[in-house]
Structure formats: C-alpha cells, structure tokens
Length: 307
Image 1 (cartoon, rainbow, N blue to C red):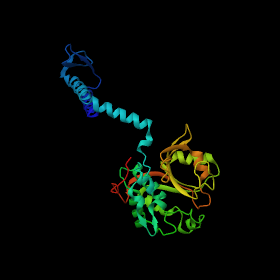
Image 2: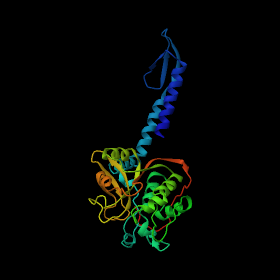
Image 3: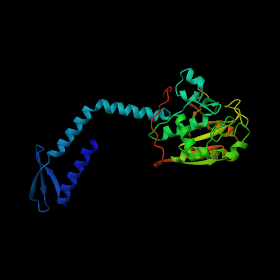
Image 4: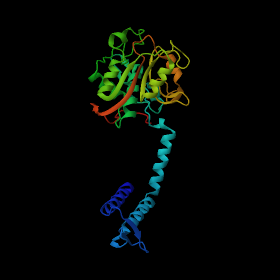
C-alpha cells in the first residue's frame, strides 16, 4: 500500500513537471497551492498541491495503523536471517523416533514394503522430501516421495534392496547395476529440480565450491571411508544445506539420527566420509523451476511429529 501511494505521488509529480518543462516551482504560504513561474518571471498557472501533503498524511496513518504488524514482520525477518535453518525440512525415517514422539518423525516409518519396513531403507526418500519441502512452496511426506518415485522412475524396492539408488548393502554392485542415484535424479527432475550426479573430487576445495554453489545436496556417506562422525555406517544418505563459509559448516538432515538431526557439522566430515566404492557419492540441487514440476504435490496426510 505504501509503495502504491509513493508511486502515485511520483507519477503526479512527473506528469506536472512534464507539462511545464524548464520551469521551477514556488510554494505559496499556507501550503495549499503552488505557482508555476515561467522564464519571464510571470506566474502562469496556480496548481493545487495539497495532494502531496495528503499522500504523506495517509502514508503515516497506514504506518501507524499497521505498526504492530510491521514490527512483527521485521522481527520474523530478523529471526529468519539469524536462523535460516528454521525453514529447512529434516524428516526422520525410523519407528523408534515415531514411538518416542520425536519432531520430524512420522507414521511412514512403519509402512511395510515387500518384507521391509520403510524405517530400514527410507533415508534417501527422506532426503528427497527434505529438498521438495524446503525449496518449493509445496509439501510432501517421505512416503509420498516413495510413491511418486515408484511412478516416474525405475525405482523398484525389493526385500534385499529397498533404498532408492542405494548400493551399500553389497558394496556398490547393485548401485552400478541399477544406475545408482539415477532413480533419485529422475524423480527430483520431474519434481522441478535441476540436479547433477557427482563423484568425490580429488580436492576438498573443489567440493567446498560445489556445495557452496548449490541449494541443497544429498550425500552418501560410509564409516568405512571415514568414521570421524558417522559410526558403523555401511552406507547412508543424508541431506546438507546452508553452507557457511565463515565456519566451513553445513546444516545436516540425518534421517537415521534423531539426536544428530538438525545439527551444524564441518563440511570436511562429509567429504572424508563420502562412500567411494559407489558409482556416485552425491547429488547437487542447483535450481528449481515451477514450470518443470510435474508433481505439484502439496500436503502431508501422514501423521507426523511436525516441525
């Protein structure tokens, strides 16, 4: 509203000055009228200029009437700037978290698929749901993402391999046969995301640059490569975002660790633990385009612990 008022005021001012190019304005005492003085010094056209004063009065009234709303909006903006992680989704996959009533857990953990519970294989799908809910105006549950991946990609969970594009169970052979991250990439692309599959770069600095330039990433980590942070982990998907160059840290979404979920950790931990035996180690999300989103799914119907 304020912007509209200012635009109208500027428009009126421009219109008047456009009709009287080369002249200057003098205000009569009392502030009710303006006089246009030509180059010969004679007063040509008296104009009512109280409209500007009226605009200013209306603007101040609007500010006064909405002071509380504006103050709260400013507080929210400051809070979001100080804690950007509040807008990042970090779903949990396990039934224990759901039983304990943990935030970010949900009933999807008990869904049963071909002899396997979602809680045993859903880390990648949780990470994909994190991306979808964080970077779009829509929402979905990890189970929604599972159903969509079944529809649009080659993802076909089995008793042995339930995870999407996960080769940790047999040392990476299944990942190579089934295309690794490709099911994940196809599903995310049909959801509107521009994403790339990547292998571990030789230098940590290159990895830093790639993560800094991306919006979010799904990374495959293994304690067999490095157990500084992840322990007894053959292969596990986590999501990372909000790279902070000043601290060299990222915000972690760890579906299998309710205590470590939503933590800030050194990016170096991620780089060192990348599962090198697998065909790809991480997926970078570069951008999102609404017109490319073929899903447009919005809403979480599963019971869950909330944010």
